[in-house]
Length: 100
Image (cartoon, rainbow, N blue to C red; front, side):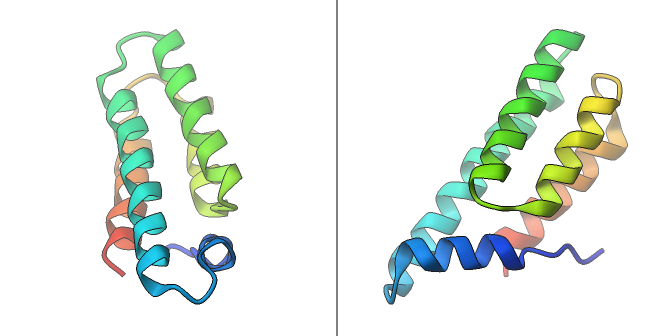
């Protein structure tokens, strides 16, 4: 599955300017932070924890204009805690983006 990350790359490039090392560092920081929220989602056992982690992930995604991840966080917010399909999609996006 291929996820669109164009606006996210544009946002990171604008922040990094002409510094490819900074671009890579910002990208890594974004992926690490998003992975932490996905891990919290994975470990959520109640509606409250699930909702908080999904909202944090959505906020992070929104601050970097990661439209695909915003949509995935919205799916999680509409779903039940521990929804495996939502978790798989989020992890797939982060794995693909982190290795591209």
